[in-house]
Amino acid sequence: MVKRRVHVAAAAIVSEDTTQVLIARRPSNVDQGGLWEFPGGKLAPYETGFEALKRELHEELGVEIQRAQPLIRVNHEYPDKHILLDVWQVHAFAGEPFGREGQAVRWVDKNDLFNYPFPAANLPILRAVILPTECLITAEEEDEEVFFTKLERALVEDKVRLVQLRAKQLDRDAYLARAERALTLCRQHGARLLLNGEPELLDKVDADGIHLTSERLMSLERRPLAQGKWQSASTHNSEQLEQAARIGCDFVTLSPLRTTPTHPDAAPLGWHDFQQLVETAAMPVFALGGMTRFDANHARAVGAQGIASIRDFWK
Picture 1 (tube, rainbow, N blue to C red):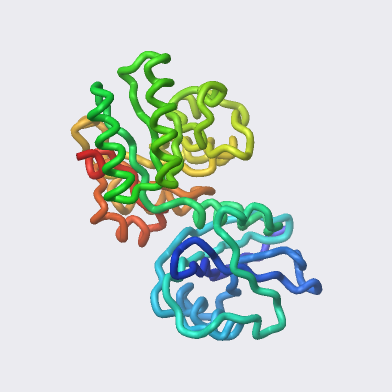
Picture 2: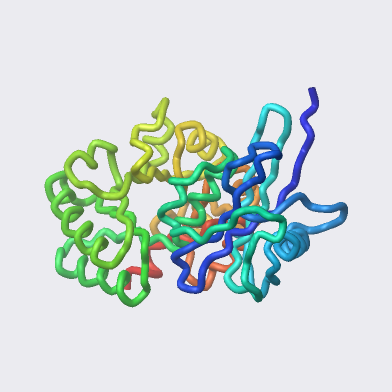
């Protein structure tokens, strides 16, 4: 049986303070009725995703988009159809949203999204909505006080809200001690902390999750973490992206986009190949490798969640 292909534009409409997102409930008489979703609908003939989004939000919610940017594109296989969700994050709009077609709509805290039942295809969107657009990977800093001075500056001045604790030069005990202190600091500033290493590290430090190396990623047969923790991984090609999806990674970094001093011999992907890989990914992807905050909008435009960086945040 040849599956029908459905192209849908959807909106993650965020509140002015960026803490809440608008969701709508599907009518009980339609496919997957009663579940919650992000507002939107199918593209009409010859419409672009953004054109469809503007039309659908006016028809469904009575609002006019003023500012939006791509968030994520999700390909999902159902038994009877293949669906492409072209999701945009709406930052500004005119009008007060309400259910013009009688549907229930609700503003919910981003961190409460997983408490609502969504169609299976929406799972990567939930992750993309919750995750920030910048990820700090800490540098190999030996001096503890210098390390924490730089980390606090990134949290306070740059408002970094996602940190991957990378410290390969430390032994296990020293790493765990740094992780405990880093976790306290991240909690003070509302940031998530991922430990770079084995999942068993979370038995010692109750951080928000684990970042897997690409080697560790490829060795796994199943997801090693409970669903309540974030699991990310380093990827460099389509095979690793497929493995990340297979074991249920919540997001990944994809690198190197550009040549970097730390990996001068690694062939850079460039924006074109990066976009091709992101298009097939089943989770949010952070661009890594020579990235700065000036690249953030470009990265979003080609489908990335945002950028991950060491040097740009670690001054």
